[in-house]
Structure formats: C-alpha cells, structure tokens
Image: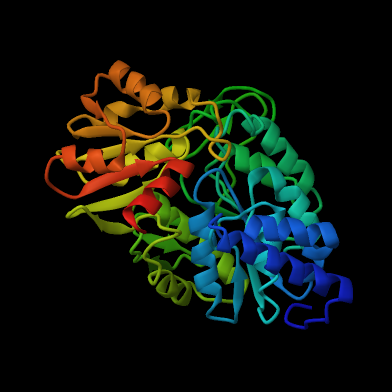
Amino acid sequence: MAGNTEPLSPRAKLAVTAGKAAAAVSRAAGRGSGSVIGGRVALKLDPDLLARLASHLDVVLVSATNGKTTTTRLIAEALRASGPVVSNALGANMPAGITSALSGGSDAKFGVIEVDEKYLAGVARDVTPKAIALLNLSRDQLDRAAETRMLAERWREGLSGAKATVIANCDDPLIVWAASSSPNVIWVAAGQEWKDDAWSCPSCGGVLQRPGDDWVCGDCGFRRPVPSWALNGDYVLDPHGSAWPIRLQLPGRANKANATTSAAVAAHFGVPPQVALERMYKVQAVAGRYDVVGFQGRELRLLLAKNPAGWLETFSLIDPPPTPVILSVNARSADGTDTSWLWDVDYTRLTGHPIVVIGDRRLDLAVRLEVAGQDFQVCESVDEAVRLAPPGRIEAIANYTAFQDLRRRVGN
C-alpha cells in the first residue's frame, strides 16, 4: 500500500547509491543534472529497481506530445495538499530519468511522473500507477517517434485491462481511441487547437465530422465521449456542475487546459478542486518555461515550442505586434533531426512582429519564413539578436535544445 515503505534489498540499495554517485560525477563534470546516467547505472545493477522504488507510492503517470512537463508540475503541487510528492520535475521522462527521480522519494506518498510517449506502456507495467493522465497526441520528432496513429494503437494495447484510472482528453480523437480500451476512464473536455493529426477516424479511417466542439465518424459512429470535467473559459467545471475559477501565473489557454486535467487528477486522489487550483497558482515557471529574465539590459520571456501544435499554442499567448520575437531552432538528437515539421507551422501568425532567427538550423527556419512572407533577420547568437531587436520585452521561442542553449546563455 502507498505510504508503507518496505526496506530496499541490499542489491537495490547498492544500485541507488551507485546511481547517485554517477549522477554526482556527471554534475561535477558539467554534463547536466546527471539524472539519466545515474538512472542507467542504477538499472544496470538492478533491472527491477524502478518497480521497487515505486512500490510504496500512489503513482500518477502523465503523457502527451505537449504539456506533460507543466501538467506534471501542476498535479504535483495539487497533491502536496495531501502529502509529500516525488516527481521528475525537470522532465527526464524515460526509465533512467524516472528511476533517478524516484530514488529520492523514500518518504513520499505520491509519485507524479512525466513519461515519454514511447515508454508509457512499459513504465505503467513497472510502477502500477493509480492514475494515468493523457493530454494529446500530435506529430513530433519525426525521425524517432512513431506515427501518431501507431503510437495511439500502442497506448491502446498497453492500457487494455489496466487497473489504473485513465484521465483523458475527450477532445482529441487519438487520445479517445487510446484510452477507450481501459475499463476506467474519466473524460475531460480540455480542448484541441491543433487538429491536423486527427482529421480521420482512428477506428476505421473515415473522415471525422466536427460540428462545433463535437466530433464523430459518420462511417463507424466512433465519437467524442461525454466529459465529466471541462474547461469553460476561465473556469473548471466539475462532475457536479460546479464552476471553479482558474487563476494561474502561467499564460495561455493551453495551461488552463493543463490545469483542468490536473484538477481532475487531484480530485481522484481526494483533493478538492478549490484546494488544487489554489495550489497551482504558486507555479510561476516550469523548468525555465515562461520565465522573464534580464539580459543585456532587456527583458526576455523564454517560451518552449517543440512541434507544430506547440508553436500554434505559443503564438496564441505572445504579446501582440510590434513585440519583437526571437525564434531559435536546433535539430540535435534530443530535438529530432528532421526539421520538415517547420512547414506545418503557420508563421503568418507572426505578421507585424519584428523577427530575429538564431539556432543551429536558422537557415531552415529562414527559408520557411521567407515562403510565409515574413520580415526577419538572421543572427549568429542571442547576443546579436537582442542588440538588433527593437525596444520592448522580447518573446524568445525555441525548440528543446535551443531552449536549453538560450537558458544557459541568458543565465537562467
């Protein structure tokens, strides 16, 4: 039972100790947090360590293409109302990183774990979660991730017969298809801005019809389930019809959707919506995302956008023209080396913004902006970009490793 910690075996203790030592060496060498290498070492010594570390926890798994790090953080804050939480808050979301995170949670009651989409089924088998939150599925890292329908099918198979309660976004047909194999689902109407990966029925391949906020397949009848929870403007509607105000320091509609799902998860563990949402207000930034930092006498707001759906959401929350915008794109292994996704982003939404382009793949992005008819400048560094940007707070939007580069350079 969660909260009743059984002593780790000598082998497991050795694995945890060795993993922490490896992580410390990695940090001392300036190679990041060390969570991944530490987890790899620990799992090498005890392949069952992840299951052992999770055995005393009430575990929530969070997976999605976009929003999983933020939602993990919001759920963790909400559940702290009921007890200590251990979480992979910095986003190391594969088994090694998750193992490192849980190795520091011996006194925790809850484990709130972000999981990479490809590893969800395997991690769920290991940690026996009490709840699984599924937010969205869209194209991402095209050179390494499965096509979205294949991923949804893999989730569907992995969740079939699962004892965990699945809290799932009923507005994303791919999520509904994946979750429908589970016997215990709580549906949340969290919205879906990006629809280009869900225009055909995942059940039969027919074209989905989308009357208003609803969706249905005219061929097989696969349709949007009736939600128990819903985002309605600035409010969360609970299953009893009560409306709870969402007051977040995090910007944008997408984060209100994340808060709605988080409130549903928290309620499953006995935390009332009012308490959960009040605790979420404390979150100002998530792993540097949304932080406003000073650099060269200017203010920069740091925004992460990794794929077409993420860029669409980010464009909706930036300050209006003529606010200057810095765009940075890399294509390293952690980003995915295929940048063809740039052509799926509607960069005409940036019309009127002075744009400066940086990053490893700045020329790829420059070609895309040229075709979109946007005015922009290409720079070698963020230092140069800031010097060239017109007055005003700068919105700095970057994909994964470009975002990390940006944070290191501006001192966040």
